[in-house]
Length: 180
Image 1 (cartoon, rainbow, N blue to C red):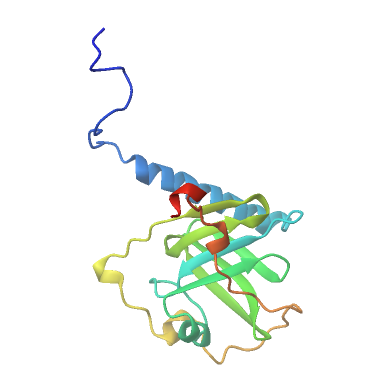
Image 2 (cartoon, rainbow, N blue to C red; image 1 turned 45 degrees about the horizontal axis):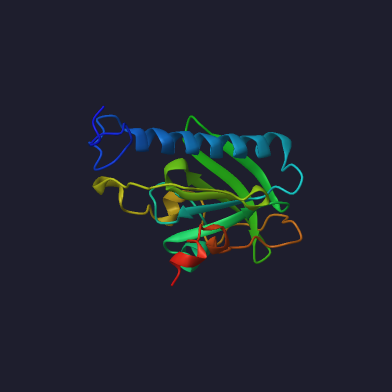
C-alpha cells in the first residue's frame, strides 16, 4: 500500500453528477410536511410547537395586505396553541392556517416552496430550505386575486395573538475557540 492514499476523503472531491443536495432538501421538506400534517390531524402534542418562516413576496403566498405591508419579504409564524384550520394540501403544494394578528383572525396560505425554515424548539430541531423563484413568477398577485384583503372580516380569534420571532436562538454557533 502506498503512503500517498489512505482511502480517506483528502483533497478536493469531484463534483457530483447526482443531485444529493436537492434530495436531502426534499427529504427535510417531507419531514416538515409530516409534522404539519400530524399537527393538523392530531393537534400539537405535548410542548411541541413550530416556527414556520416563509417569504411573503413569493408567488402564491396569500396573506392580508396589512401583514404584507408589515412583513414585505419574510415572516415567521408560531404554531402552538392559538391557531386553527391548519391544512397541508399536497395536491396544491401549500399550507393554510388561521392565526390571530392584533385580535383579527386571518388565514394565511403558503406554498411549500415559499417556506425558508421550520423549527420545533421543544426538541431543538431546525431545518432551513432554499427558495428558487423563476423569472416569470416574481410578481406578487394584486390583493383582489389573493382572495384575502385588508378588509378581511374579523373571525373569532383565540385569546393570544400570533408571534413573529427570531430564529437566532436555534442557529448553530461555532465553538468558543472559533469565536475570537
